[in-house]
Image (cartoon, rainbow, N blue to C red; front, side):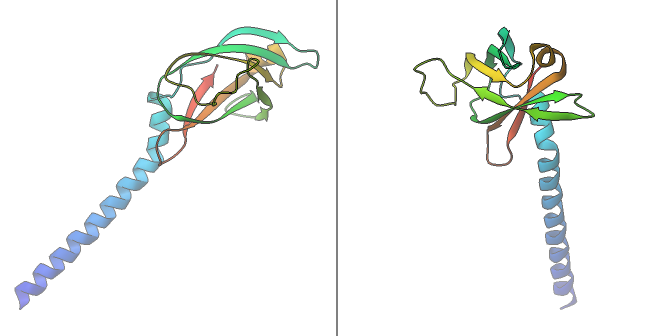
Length: 150
C-alpha cells in the first residue's frame, strides 16, 4: 500500500513538473520567437527606392523594389517619422498601383517592383528621419514584422 502511494505521488510530481516545463517553454517561445523571426528570418529584403519625387502638397512619391524571401500573407505597411528609440509618429502611406492593376496585395516570392506610393513626408524627411515596417502572417502564432526601411 505504501509503495503504491509513493508511486502515485511520484507520478503526480512528474505530471506537475511536465506541465510547468510545457508552459515555461510556451512562454519562452512566444516571448523570444517574434524577436528572433524579425532579426533572422525577415519576410522581405530592405526596400530599395528606385525614384523619389516631391508632390505639390509636400508629400513624397516613390517607386520601390524589394525581394520577397518568404511566402507569407501581407497584412500591412506602417511608415514612421522621428528618432526610433525616442520619439516618433506614424505617417500616412497610400499604396497606389499602376493603371489596370487589380491583383491581390499578396506577392509571390522573388524580386518585386512596387509603386507609386505616396508617403506623407517631405523627401528629405523620408530619406533621413523615417523608417518603415511590414507585417505579414506566416503562421498562426504571431504576426511577423520586418524592418523594411531604411
